[in-house]
Image (spheres, rainbow, N blue to C red):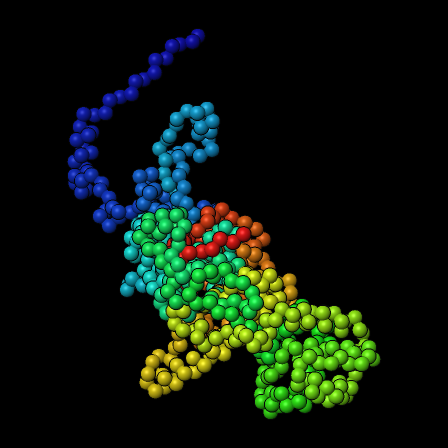
Length: 610
């Protein structure tokens, strides 16, 4: 038989319970209060999980402190267990998560999809990478352990963060993303910046030109001599302040002034146009064939193996002719390095003339009358040299193809032109001067590469001389032995140093590598700029220690950059494809760790390109 059972009611607490609790609390120090030393903590470290990674910890924080922890912030973590003090950097987040619920739980999903307002209590979560441990002198060393769970986390002020990140210097770059007042600077007087070489990479429209012109403007103010290879002519007006309304607005917002670069010079190839209309200092120049190593010439011209053999044969015969005619001093010629320079006194016309004589010899036809007056006067001797030159390949089509390439180059009239001198490399190295080579009207990658190769060799020789003089002054107690720093900016670097042709350009790469190695001691630095980094060979990236990476959409390129640029947290790479114009991932040898930076707007006028 069922019996009704009446549930027992909950008994009331004894009347003196609250009094006893209050007495016990008073006996043990009163109500709990947060210790003074952790009152300003922004959050606490979380326990590790199976998915946790070495070198990182998860930090949880209340919702009202989320705005106090921007991405890229540095924090101090005081380990709860051993009181060690760690420095960490926010590499992911902060994210928001509901308290006690999963963000994708049914109540959250239903309320959001049905248009209802349901905002439960929530907290913040950030992933922090441990970048160092502070010693008793507040100096940062490599971390030996990791913080214990529930350790308090404190934010750093902008001034302390700037100091820890090494953001001081004389050259302003921009603002650290997430901060309105944390200026990112670098130092042109440090040897690990300019002479350690730089790469500015990113897709078209990502902001490379703004970065380049702004950087050039600021380093020139600090006495750095800058030489720019301008393939589009867009920097030909940087002597004027920017008139761009967007740039003017952005400059004003950051407290910067629009202004042009004071000491600029424009150079263009003889017979070619320049975009530098109205510029006060414009000069034309030509190339000297004798400045080019015969091996560099074969690589830049892209000769086939057969054409290369014929080129070198014709070159050797031309050397003999120049010696026979007394045009070249044979003793002086023996002192040259044929891998870095050409034969003294040799002109492109000389080589083309000899090539015509060789082809006539191969075809067993009467030799043509030379155009050069010295050659014409002693034509018979030239014929004797060719007949006594030993075995000459009889394959006529290869000789004809080589002749076509060389005579086409000669007809450009850019070699050995009496109207225009060589580039004045010594004058270009004046401190604070910006020299711009406008190649916008050449319409030839081969010509551009010849100009770049000649310029690099010329600048290296000039800077070597300045370094030697500085060392002499130092020995005499007059100076520090350092010449004025030089930065060479190479636009469209992928066309000069092509990954696809790397195995066929050994001498050219050797030249660049030689400049790179010697330049590090002599304060001569290279800056490679391109929107197609996938076409740059690994050898180039191996020379570079400083990177400014704008938007890069190609996942293969991003993967390659991961292998090239060290010390970049994994989470930062995922943002490269979505960076806005003017944003960049900056990894400089002068800065402790990579940062996302909102690059400063350029103060100079840039010419639009089609």
